[in-house]
Image 1 (tube, rainbow, N blue to C red):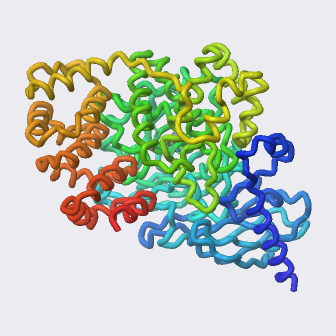
Image 2 (cartoon, protein in one colour; image 1 turned 30 degrees about the vertical axis):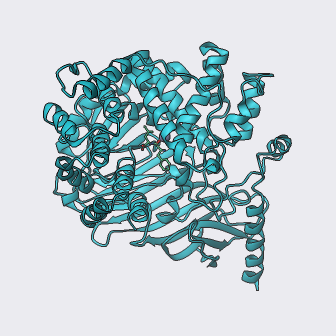
Amino acid sequence: MIKKIAYLIVFGFIMCSCSQEKDTNDSNNKTEIIMNNSILDSHTLSNYKEVSIDHSHLNLTVDFNSKLIHGSVTHTINNPNKDSVFILDTKYLSIEAVSDQDGNKLDFSYGEKDDLLGVPLMVLVNSNTKKVTIAYSTTNKSEALDWLNAEQTSGKDFPFMYTQGQSIFTRSWIPIQDSPGLRITYSADVTVPAGMLPVMSAANPQIKNNTNVYSFEMNQPIPPYLIALAVGDLQFKQIDYRTGVYAEPNMLESCVDEFADMGKMVSAAEELYGEYDWERFDVIVLPPSFPFGGMENPKLTFATPTIIAGDRSLVSLIAHELAHSWSGNLVTNATWNDFWLNEGFTVYFERRIMEALYGKDYTEMLALLGYQDLQEELVTLDPKMQTLKLKMKGMHPDDAMSDIAYEKGYFFLRMIENSVGRELMDGFLKKYFSDHKFQTIVTEEFLAYLEANLINGKRESLKIDDWVYQPGLPDNCPVVDCKRFINVESAIDDFMLTNTIANLTTTEWSTHEWIHFIKNLPDTVNSNQMLMLDEAFNLSSSGNSEILAVWFERSIVSNYQPAFPYMRKFLIKVGRRKFLQPIYESLAKREDHKIWAKDVYKYARSNYHYVSFNTIDEILK
Ligand code: BES
Ligand code: ZN
C-alpha cells in the first residue's frame, strides 16, 4: 500500500516537473521565472528540488577483470518537507540493496525506463532517514566508463579506465541525482589492483601506496557531472607549487614540458577574475581514446594526449579547462538549456588568459579560427539550435555542444566588452563570479544581473535578446582583427596562381597559421597540388593532431589518396570526437570513401568511448 502511494506521488512529481519548463522566449514571462526560480532540469528523473543530496561517499572497487566497478554509495540527504520518497537517477546499473544510517533496509522500486534518461530509483525514506546507502555494481553498458586493455595505453603494461560524467553519464556509474542544478560534496575510498593509481576530481594522492586503497575528498560543493575517476599506471610530476601533471610514466616528461606555463596560467586567471578556489590545478593526460579535448573535472582536468604537440602550440585547451574553474565549476548552468553560460564564458575567459600570456596578435588567430568554425556551422545547423538559450528537453544535452554555445557565446561577451570597455567588463565578470560562486544559474538570471550591473538601459540597443533567443549572428557581432592570417591568405593565392611552393615562406608559421592555410585552400585544389604540399611539409605525417585533422578533411575533398593510410592510422588510434566526426562525415559523402570508412571503423570502434562511437555509428549507418 505504502509503495503504491509512493508511486503516485512520484509519478505526479515527474509529470509536473516535465511541464514546468517554461517558454522563455516570451520576455513578459522572464521576471516571473526569475522570481519563482522554478526552472527545473528536464534531464533528471530525480526529485532533487524536494529531497536533495548534500554529500555522497563512495566505497568502490575497480575490477579490471570483469570491467566493472562495484561497492556502495552513501548519500547524506536533506529532506526539509519530510517527503517519503527519495528519487535518484540510474542508467544501466545493478542495484543490490538499500539501507539507512543504522543499516536498516529501505524499500526501493524503479520507475519507468526512459531511453535517454535512464531509470528512476525510488527509495522510501522517513523523517529519521539521514543517510541512504546503495550497494550496487556498474554493468558493461555503462555510458560513462571506458575500459582500455594494456595495448590501448602508451606503456602497454597495465590496463586503464576513466569516467566521463558530463552531461548525463554520472548516473551510469553512480546512482545519484544527476542534475547540474544540484551541488554536493563527495568523498571516496577506492580499491584498485596493485601497481595502479586512482585519481579523482578531488584532493589526490601523488604516489602509489602498498594497500591499493586510496581515499579522496572533494570539500567544495560541485554538480554530480563533475565527479570523475581515472585509474592507470600513473605517475605525478609537479610544475609549480599548485600545478602538476599525471600521466603514464613514458609520457610524463613530454607532458610536463608541454604544460610548462600552467602555473602562469592560473596566476593570469586569478589576476583577471579573482582567486582560484580549488587549491590545486592538476591535469591528467589520458590515453587517446578520450572522447574530448579536455574535461574540466575540478582540481584535475582530464585531457587528450592529442594536445601534446611538442611545441606547446595547443595549450589554449588547458587555458580553457582552467577557465572552467570559474565559469562552469564555480558558477554552473542550472540546466543544459543554459549550457552556453558554461562554455561561452569559458571561451571568453580562455582567450583572455591566452592574451595575457601570449599577446593579442596570437590570440586573434584563435578567435578568427573560432569565428570561421562558427560561420561554417551556421550554414548547416538547424535554426532552433542556433540560439544561446536552448530547449533541450527530449534531446541529449550533449547535442548542445556546438559552436553556438562556445563561439557565439564568446562573441556575445566580446560584443558587450566592446560596448562598455574592458575595465568595466572585467569588474563586472569578477563580481559575477564572486556573487554566484558555488551556485547554479539560468540564462534569465544572468540577463537580469547583466542589466542591473553593467548594461543598464542598453538591452535593446545591444540586441541582447536577439543574441540569446534568435538564430544566427546579430549585425553587431565584433570583427576579428587578425594580422597574422593576412600573410597566410596571400600565400594561398600565390600557391594557387603559380602552382609552386617556391614563394611559400612558412618557417615562422605557428600551428594556427598552418590550420588557416589548409582550411582555406580552395575546393579546386587538386591531388597534384596536395602532393606538392605534402612532399614539402610532411603534412600527412604531421605530429600535430589539429593540423592532421584539417589536412585529412582536405585530403578527402581532393581525394588525395596518399593521405589515406595515415588517416586510417589516426582514426584507429584517436577517439577524440571533434576530430572523428567531421572526418567520418566527409567520408560518408562519397560511396567509395564510405566503404573505406566502414572498413576502418571495424578496427577503430573498439578504441572509442561511448560518446564517440555513438556519434559515428549514426554517421556510418
Ligand atoms: N566541458 C567541455 C566538454 C564537454 C562538453 C563534455 C559537453 C560533455 C558535454 C570541455 O570544457 C570542452 O569544452 N572541451 C573542448 C575543448 C575546448 C578547448 C573547446 C573539447 O573537448 O573539444
Ligand atoms: Zn569547455
